[in-house]
Length: 113
Image (cartoon, rainbow, N blue to C red; front, side):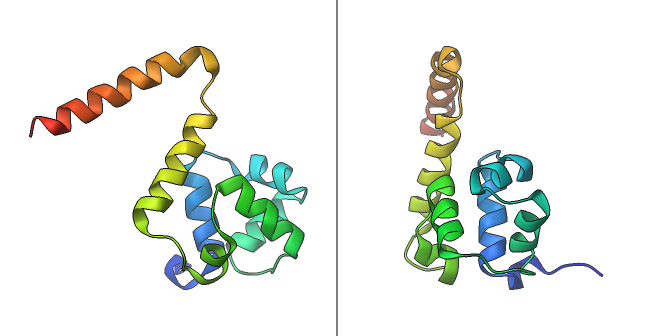
């Protein structure tokens, strides 16, 4: 049976953001202090989560609890910004100059169009 991720609500928002930030389910489960299976069950909508876990998800993924629970309170630009800053924060210090060069090149290539 194929899952319809658009109908999974908060679990879908968590999964999509986690994947966009390049965080594995294993990494996420460690940050949330839960098992990988439980983390997957949350994402698939099989299990709910405690307030403490919700706050850890919010902090880890840089998402508001309102957005996680209800899909509200953030526009697309804000969500993108938070995902991007989350990815940048994972970049090794010795690679930040390289990342900055990539971003400058990307922006310049789109400014010319």
